[in-house]
Each structure stands twice: as C-alpha cells, then as structure tokens.
Length: 336
Image (cartoon, rainbow, N blue to C red; front, top):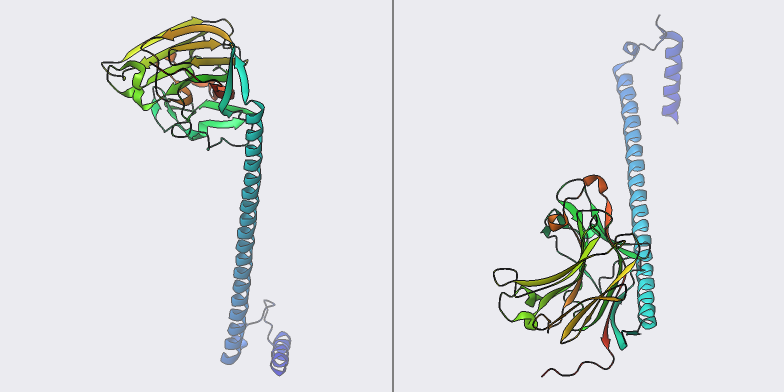
C-alpha cells in the first residue's frame, strides 16, 4: 500500500512540476530508479496481457475440442441408431418377401436388399475395386443410397469419370435360382448399366464351358439413344478360348426413367431371361453355369456404350429399387 501511495504521489508531483511544453511527462526527469520501476511495471503489464491472451486462446481451443468431440459422439450415436433401424427394416423386408411364386414355381428368399436404409449394407455388399474400365474408374463415393434406392452415379467432367459398382463376392454366392432386380436405366448415352452374375471360374481359359463357371449378364444397358438392351453369357475365360452369346433387343421406352424388372431363372439345364415379367431369351446346353455366382450391380462409361457428353454429368448410371434372390422350395432334381 505504501509503495502504491509513493508511486501515486510521484506521478502527481510530475504532473504539477514536470510537464513540458508538449503536455507530456518528460521521462528524462525521472531518476534511474524511477525509470527502472516504470519499466518493470510496464513489463509486468505486458506479461500479464500476454498470459491472459494465452489463457483465452487455450480455453477457446479446449472448448473447440470439446465441441468437436461432442459432435463426433453425437454423429456416432446417430449412425449406430440408423444402422440398428436399417437392420430391423432388412429383417422385416426379408420376412415379408420370404416366399414368392414366379412362372408357376414357388420360391423361398435367400438374399434381398431393398436399399431403404441410411447406408449401403456392408454385410451384404462390397464396393468393387477401383478398376479402370474404358472411360471410368469405379469408386466407393459413386455408389450410395438415396430416397430408398441404390444410386450408381457417374460424376466428373472428363475421362476418367467416376462410376459406382458393388458386388456380393465372398459375401453371398449361389448356384441356380430366381434372380431379380428392379431398376431405372441410365439417362445418357455413353453409360452401360448392368446386373450380372460372376464367379472366378468364368475367367478360366479352358474348354469346360459353364461347368466351372460363366459370366451371366442378366441385363446390359449400353445404348440409351438406340433404346437397346441385351442379355449375354460368357465362358471359357476372356482370351483365345473365350466364347460368348448375346441377345440384343430394341425396346421402345426401356430408358424412360421408370422402374423395370430384369430377371433370370437359372436351372441346371437352362437360363430363362425376363424383362418386366415377359420371357425374352432362353439359353441351354453347355452354356449353363454349374457353380455358385455372386451378383454385381455396375455402371461403366465408354467402350461399346459410346462417348459420354461431359455436360451430362453428374448423372445416375443406374438406380436400383431392390434385388431379390430365391431358390425353389422343392429344389432341383439331381444331375445325371
């Protein structure tokens, strides 16, 4: 207290006797000890201000970190809740579609996805690897759920575009049965949308035919402007021993941005292909695959589909409402 009074007295005296013509305190009138005390007070004041600034900055960072942690915890809790909802819905959908009858045969459901959830179900699907196919590369970001449908998008404004593709390899594989997808086909020329079955044996360059595997293209939609789609089967690898057969169809309105069903009844002796419930093509003989296959839903750009106008992107390469896979309730007779 005495020190403070001394300083105040000194300052008062300076104001009375030490003011120069410029109206300010002339520092030269202070003694060495007084100047030292003045510098000390100023240094302490600056240090206190810097300390307070640092404290406020640290508190702001701490508050930001706490807010970020809270947001992450809330996002995690929301996702967990949404995933639980998705699983409950998937169980309900499966039970509601457990049995169906198609073309006089009763079937029991083995695999289904209605894509009504918040996220792609990774218990059922895997993203196709980031392979470059003609004018695009498959990426995870281009395959997502939106408004109750799987979207296989095509994005970008130059080659290579990004496109969506998913598959059930090593998750769900089945030989034979009834396979059906309900989808909207691409709305731009230069995109090929496909629902197909695949297995490792399809790439074997042998002459065993479908006995050890085949690629079964339930629907390929590469020609928007032509209104043309096709079914196809490939076997004995993709090199010099490769064999294929296909069935192109010009169908007015098939690219009308409406839902259509594309189906396959696969028996040990036959493939029966359908569009909107109507039989379109039958294949039998050595082409019939005799081993389990996995499903693929893909969008691709370029190649035999033609050139994509970059002004058309972003665009849906394919929208999928659901996929259902069945086996006949009574099974198949044993092969000879």
